[in-house]
Length: 176
Image 1 (cartoon, rainbow, N blue to C red):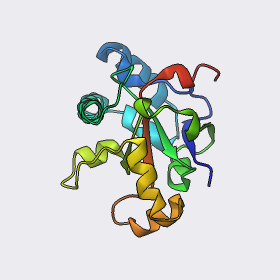
Image 2 (spheres, one colour):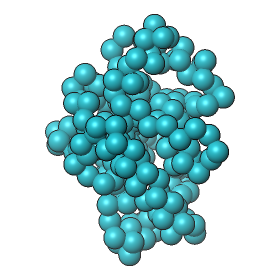
Image 3 (cartoon, one colour):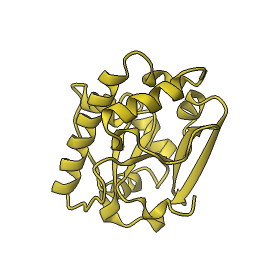
Image 4 (cartoon, helix red, strand yellow):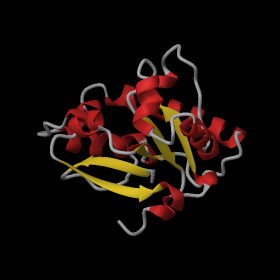
């Protein structure tokens, strides 16, 4: 089965940008723009609690960055671009009217991508096993489920509704 990374965004949003790359004051201005007038469920994080979200997201990103480096990753950025492995109905519903991009996982070098079972920020702030996977690790796990993401997620449904991918190099995004 061919595996794709999928990035969802609201139809009016700029593709593959990370708000945590911005300094806090710039991020707050952008968050206010995204939040005001948006009915997009995913934009709720940009409301009144944005500063807390921003700080929490940056802590989770630092944890993933450190873990990925320990596993041999070579991130080109401190703030990854977020994808799912294969389409996720749960995430697409968060965006209402959405657009998405897809990248063939085979095109991504192992040193540029990491994975978590489920939302990385939620995972970081729970008591669950804090696990970051390499591409090799993920593919080995998928082999146990006949390379079927849905079969794997069905088996791990208590753990995750999707597989999140963190892309640590923007060279794969330059054509979008």
